[in-house]
Length: 114
Ligand code: FES
Image 1 (cartoon, rainbow, N blue to C red):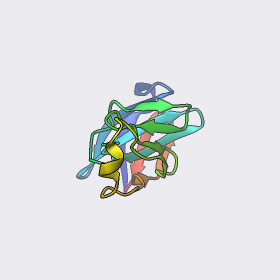
Image 2: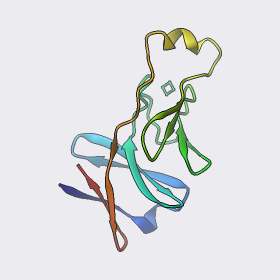
Image 3: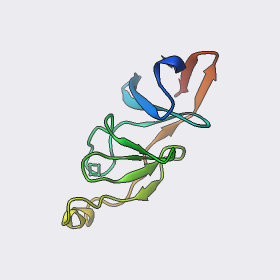
């Protein structure tokens, strides 16, 4: 089912917007080659990534322990590494990709297919 979630004119290239799709909080990213959707909660310790940093038109970095995820695939690019010592937590919080959803754009309208 297609969910209209935002207008592309609301999300400047290189930024993201938090939306809700059914019961999921979803981040909509506007990158140089299109629009992408990932879950908004970091898979490490569930911090919201609404204020996550977009790195090199490719990754989103969690603001808490700096895990980085590929926005296009959800895959982990670098697992939590900050502050020093967080690696102890990582023994029980193994790498896990972000969920992603297909996105369609028609004119100015962005749809998430869920
Ligand atoms: S909660 Fe995101 S890296 Fe730890």
